[in-house]
Length: 264
Image 1 (cartoon, one colour):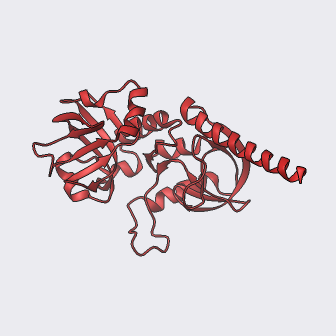
Image 2: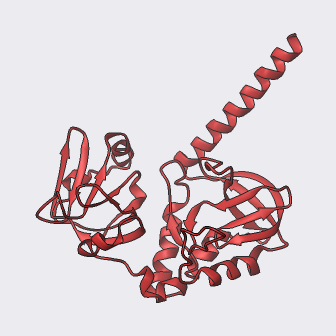
Image 3: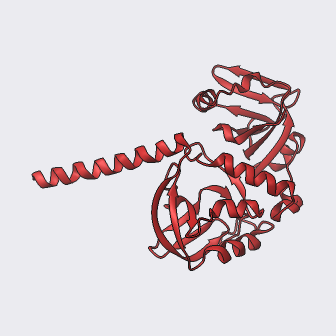
């Protein structure tokens, strides 16, 4: 009985320490080094399968989508090129996994950064060639600043997917036509307000119909910790990324500071 209790306490301790290390990594910006495995299959431009049967989703990026047997998903431009690039880079090779926050998604896939034996950072390699876009989350923000810089350089050079109109940064006025898609929107804030703790960045005269970015009180604390006060951004031009939903007009919910780049 005592051995069973001690074993249970050890498991709880290990799980808790893993939880703490993951969250510490997200706060500090440092990756927590994991184990190594060989890539035996490439699913698409941001997902691989390892020889230990784990499926790894390359955290922090999104490659152009392939249907993969899903009738509701259309193949996006550069999806084949993205998969081919990742396949050429990692298939059959040993990769090191590193953690920057949450370690598993709701599909059971590992959420990891991958490095090759020669130090190549796989996410960075894809971004600088325009084979993926930055796609970050509140609970997995480590190295996002570095990824944004690589994406920006690729976009300026019209590398890969950035040469295609499908991935063109849109204006606020075009957001109405892009509901239920992941987009980068560049626009000037007409009015920024905080109401009952929630921040609203409005980009038109009528907040009931025009494009809006909103930040909840919970997510707003991350902005405050970063020294940012988005409610003071009236008149500023920003670039925001995220899924456009329809809520009194097209809207993006900003959950963490890296989603919004203040341009001027």
